[in-house]
Length: 145
Image 1 (tube, rainbow, N blue to C red):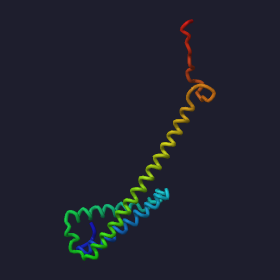
Image 2 (image 1 turned 90 degrees about the vertical axis):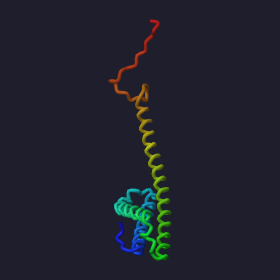
Image 3 (image 1 turned 135 degrees about the horizontal axis):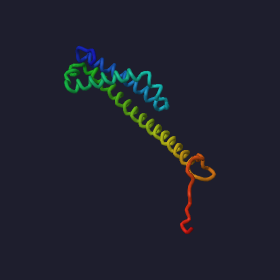
Image 4 (image 1 turned 90 degrees about the horizontal axis):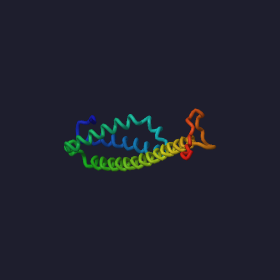
């Protein structure tokens, strides 16, 4: 939970938290779009901790709206604004994650297809075959004999 004693303090803390979380998600999204997801690793712990605090605080506010009710109107409006930015950042991040997932799945599928092609090419008989000499030879039987 946020360290806040009044609705105004809680709103201010939630604004700071939401703003920082939005910054981290936007940074992560930019790295995903640049196909550099591993560069996002250094700030994943911070993002995860802030997201946990955010979820808990939002759940507490939903359960008890009085936690923010007496906050000044200007703070409530600012909180709505940063929350809208946060939501936009989450949607952009989701699109980047989906694009990265599709790209990754395509690469994995290509590698698997190539491995299967090479495996199939190695099997069989004929000039392109790489069968080991110890493999059992094929036998043709003439039933008329």
